[in-house]
Length: 348
Image 1 (cartoon, rainbow, N blue to C red):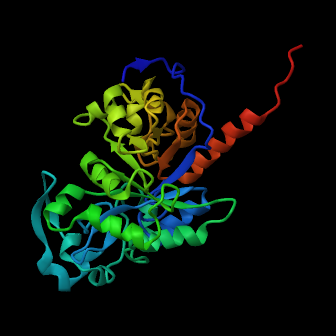
Image 2: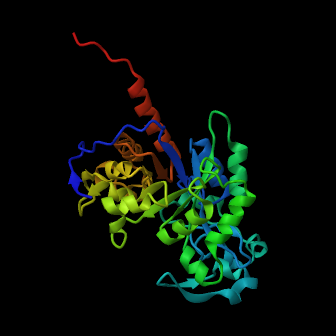
Image 3: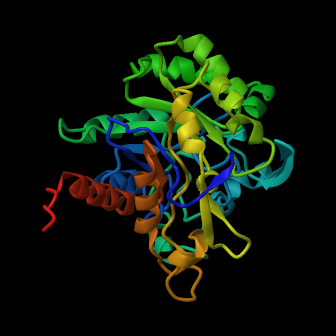
């Protein structure tokens, strides 16, 4: 995508209200992937909650950021599992720890969640040990229970390492298709949306689910091996198996080496031309994750102006934003809606 001026993106008008997607719930305030995090996200205005899915030894889909457990649970404090600590290569990276594929769901139920980024979010450690590991089915049940006619809530699930899990004898896409059937979530307007970085996993799901099946979204990394996906031809190819893209926000908001915002790309316009929705990730309120002009104070973990970042992306025409702090995007959306509905004052 080529760079344009800050105000030059000419996105077509979208009739749908942009969505607020609670990334792993509301992890700015509660440990990610916990019941408290998902519930708070809904209270803060999220239209969807976003679990990352990994697989257990007995083929259950559970919500963890990755299949290694020691960063997000208290597994290291369980002497009965000490012998399961090992080193293996996951998608080309050597990782040491405890892995979901070595545990049954019943065993995972004995673990408790902890804050995964305590250095950035130390206040969240107050909730360590209070919550357990959730399944996809439990998160869908939560979304259904918390939905109202005025605020329907859905689940936007990301498949983690589907190709790697399949190589371990745990075919994630097949397990997911079966689970979506059990959850009555096989329709495009159903309670579940599915995302993945691996195009092949999404192609398999589209073949299994059919053209009118569960909505699929292609995730796109910030830069590197997936650059071809965001060319016009790449976007057209995505449209043959997916309904939208979820690019790293840096694919839209372009930054210099010093972290300053220097422009925006035309990715939104190009994706819309290909018939794809656009939902960038991940908006986070801490200074370390924000462009330099939106940081407040010198503490990298201090809270900056994430609402302005959300407002810019929404004004550029995205169809939703994936955020760790749903209320910032909810307020930004309300501001833009109020401005759009305000009466035009006659000039005198």
